[in-house]
Length: 116
Length: 114
Image 1 (cartoon, each protein chain N blue to C red):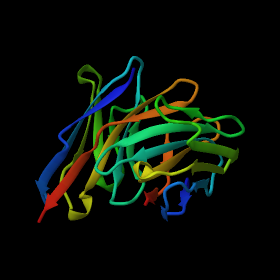
Image 2: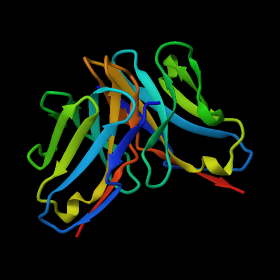
Image 3: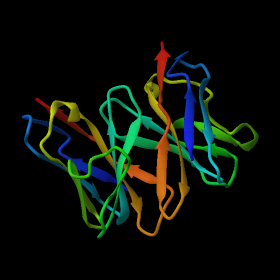
């Protein structure tokens, strides 16, 4: 149980285009989802916390207009990288917590974004 | 503020040898502590977690970790390394502040030699 999926697993796009990444909790309801980015050989950096039905909370230094997060249902959150540039190339990982509050996050497999 | 320090960005052991990955934390309140493993180009898999119950926590794949409040440590161990244990390991801390926000350590890459 507690499986989280991400789609797509890999995406290559041209500079200036927008890319949407989906994060789904497959067998549980997730009140809260988190979005991280991970640069090569580095740790995960929290970008934002996404709560169903409300606006996402962004970490300091993360541009909310560039990284649009929508958490429309208890099983789906999306991250849209708008007007992507090569420096946005990274590994994006989402995680989800069980509804009702939980100390444990369940992670998706990640999405590798490459911006040319 | 919470923080996590993992000592050693790389650890190399021989197959069958003891694995010890070090993690120290700082937290103003009793923390929740986690160890995750990440294989190349994959997400994170939970190995084990400490949530103020038993101080010695057993996880999957033969790993365990001991919470030592006096040392603010949560080191990860495994008695006998296997080749399949080669991966990146992350220690993490979180606390309930109306929602759980997790802070990750920098990670330790474990190499296992035949």
